[in-house]
Amino acid sequence: MLKYNGRIITKNDRWIGDVKVPLPASTARFRFSDPTYDPRTEDRWSGAASSKWSKVNTAGNVWDWTSAGCLADFANNRQGGLARPGVWNDRNFNVELLDTNMASSDPGIFDFTNSFEYCNNFVCIHKISSKPHQMKYAFTGTSISSVPMFDASEVRSLQGTFDECPNLEYVPDLYIPSCWNLSWTLYADPNLRALPNWNTEHVTTFDYYCANVHTPNYYIEEIPDYDVSSAQIVRRAFSGLPNVKVGMYRLYQKLAALGEQITNHENTFAGTGTNTPEGRAERALIPQSWGGDLVEE
Image 1 (cartoon, rainbow, N blue to C red):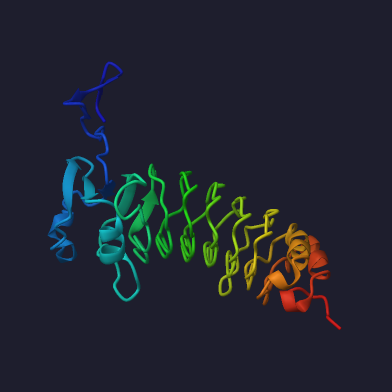
Image 2: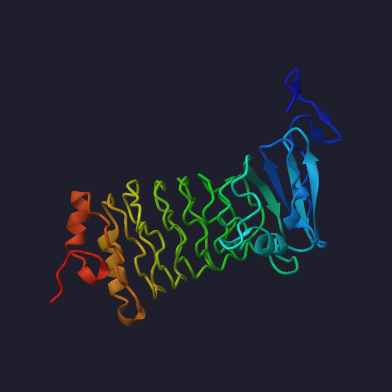
């Protein structure tokens, strides 16, 4: 932005050199690091009569994607999946999501499913003003380093949402009272500094939740005191965290007390706590079938 005598210079309610434009309804706003890039030139976008791109700011190459209801057209048909990688993969520019304005009353309901899956040039989420309902594999394999706080109170599933993000360091303590699925949510995030302390009282599936099977995470030192009262599947949920010092045995006790409600606990804590004396002491109390070191008779 430009300033004169400490005041921001504006024209038609826009900052000169930056963006100060209200976000329209049913719109997601993006910034592209290449000042010459025009998303309308992509073949993948052709034929989407229900949606359009419009340029918001020239200096920052900011564009609005407006859909006739939600991000479903963008999410499911435009970006996601290994079999059909997003149009921004392996390009000479980076992509940032600046904000979203998708009301939950929009037709189709705001759905982030597969939106940026394996889009390696997607580097930043600045803000999510909407209330997503689904976020399955939304940011899998992207290059984001952090996740902003947002209203996740209506999210049903966070399956794979932030998995395989090699640069991810921070995820906030989201409020997720409607979420039942945390399978693969933080899987293979070797640089995550700490596990978020989410309210998980309704989560039934923790399958591979924060597992680091192939590349261990050496930063995480504590497993939060999660509410696992609804848990059923916890296979490898907290595996591959060798520097954990506390929380492993506490969580095991809560899970074991659920008895037959737990249908799969294979290697829940495999490879976790192995590098610390505190972790090894806890592992000695956890049966091998759960991924601990206690020999079962």
